[in-house]
Image 1 (cartoon, rainbow, N blue to C red):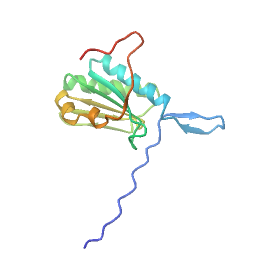
Image 2 (cartoon, one colour; image 1 turned 180 degrees about the vertical axis):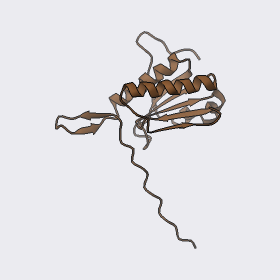
Image 3 (cartoon, rainbow, N blue to C red; image 1 turned 60 degrees about the horizontal axis):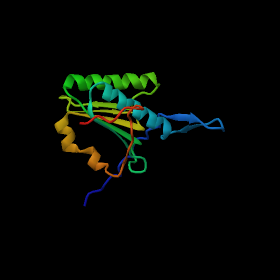
Image 4 (cartoon, rainbow, N blue to C red; image 1 turned 135 degrees about the horizontal axis):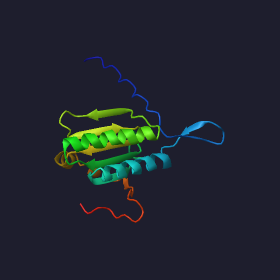
Length: 153
């Protein structure tokens, strides 16, 4: 029998969305501000020609994040550009990514903003991992601008 060492505690990820409560203390706001940021990211992805963009509210389902923004890219170059634009948008809102992960072939790019995680896939890779099915209990958040209908894809 081997001695098993306990696993280290997961690294705490502080919320990027902090509001000031009436008592003057900052409190994490994984709700409205994070949802607004997720919607902004989805709109950016759509404007940058991503397809099948969706925002999933995984609060209460995921211990890691509150919102997932998922989209499909059209090429390696376009996908890398979209992720650069997402990081720029975050910087404009004074949000720094916790971690950026990019695979060598640009099949799956991830930007982790703690309360919002962006997944940008090459279409075949997206179909393989099928995050929407994995998070099937999550509420889909409408992200279209007023008067804009969801694109037929």
